[in-house]
Length: 290
Image 1 (tube, rainbow, N blue to C red):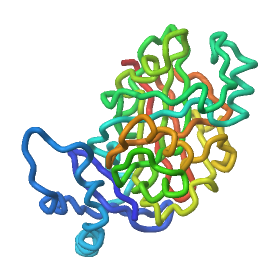
Image 2: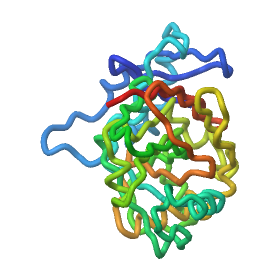
Image 3: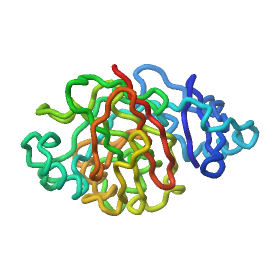
């Protein structure tokens, strides 16, 4: 199952072959979500209840007339993530390129273990969908693209053991972790409005299968810049969930960004970024001045 959100805040199910996908409106499923008032519960309620609603979502899709995927304006697939957890420098080839190019690392030692460097958070206010694009700030500084596999938490948990970690994943998205280079902490430089792009859909975990065997690629203005496979992650998705959950309770809708491979490059207003991950999909993201 591939769920998407699209303007003006509709929920869709994507079906069809690559290049001929259709979006089936299943927005009516929101009427089945638990009614709640202030103070609102933690987590995204659609993601929290997705398992119980899947059959009804499929039935709604069966009745809907599909719209071509290319015609809808895609928003972030997850509407209400409580937090975005980021694993930095999780591919060896990216660590090597950062060591060669000090404009990336600014003198920091990025070749450290997960236990030594930890993870960090991005502000949820930075999240947009592909159609909304990146509104570049600080154009006098280097702004880079970073394609990443993103895991969406589906079941709450804390102190989750690695061998049970993937049971807590609802699905996966393509992510762009946009970055202003500099000496400040990454959580500041990566949390600018529109610098966290999620799309084109959330592919459920059963549709994706093994998260450690996915090709991921990125093109900038048609030129391929990044190409790798998630098998080359230093810390796997399951290990990252185990580690992060030692510090945070993970709630449905929380997003884990798992790091980027080598090939990061600067972007500027007027550029078009295309990012793709196998078995999830491909998204086009325009860049403009913010």
